[in-house]
Length: 367
Ligand SMILES: [Zn+2]
Image 1 (cartoon, helix red, strand yellow):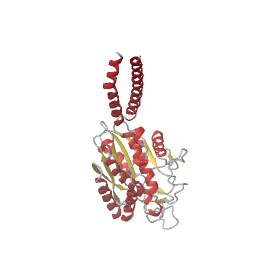
Image 2 (cartoon, protein in one colour):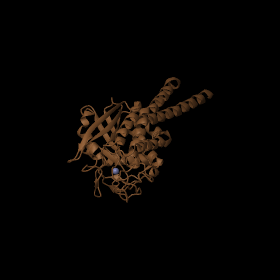
Image 3 (spheres, rainbow, N blue to C red):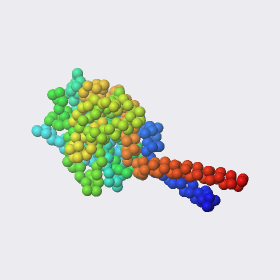
Image 4 (cartoon, helix red, strand yellow):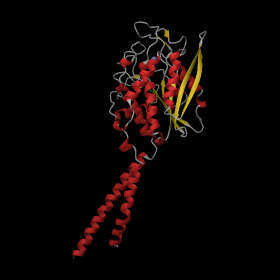
């Protein structure tokens, strides 16, 4: 009996368990792969250059040539990386003002998957500098306010295109127009415009872009003003608490504790996420305290490249990359891990039994 058992163990079981172990490891993502910044491929220089390119067009205010040219440029940038680009065009006309042609630009990857994660940013820039001390009626460069979100989103479209086959969700890269022309300190960006006009229009027509019966929008993640120095995100109180905690935890896992603090400033912000929240989607606005915070250039002429820090672009880009990797990689993440640990346990036990038996037999032979 002893000998047969040993032979069987030697020939089959150990091998089978080893194979099971290796097999389960191949399904395992979370414990070994994610949350290591060196395994992330987001490149902040690319994102920075994308901001610079936008500023080269001039002020991206609806109704201007710069605005049109920038839309074409965003379209061309993302179509290299995504499976499909859709233009959502609309016009805005207030009181006796002229009608303005606007466009939301939507790039999609993995259109065959049923879950949808939307990454959003606004691409228009503000037509006035109401918070500056001079030339208040002149437009601002919008390097951070507008430009930074667009730069990060274009780079993320490159990043996710490289491992889209490993993701079990669609990712939408949504560039929203007409966000930043609302009323502040006695001034409209464009006369009588509200904030976040583009996202409201998009959500009105959203069912032209997906099938609400067979597809589901998992979440809407908005990034706005993510490129300033000393990046520190707030707890935006219109955002979903669970999504907020998940993304902040992801950032801290990468060591970005000051950007994603344990006790962030709490503030409610009117931004492009509101329309999606009202549509019933869990949303987050990843934004800084632009009222009393460290970054003083909001809606001023100093919102330019000098006040953009590539480190901040890296922090937000890597955090979103890592969040998607941790939550949407295909496979059996935690499951595979437990199978692996369980099989190591059995393997070790069987080996111990094997050696004890072997010793006993040797002793018997000596006798
Ligand atoms: Zn703004």
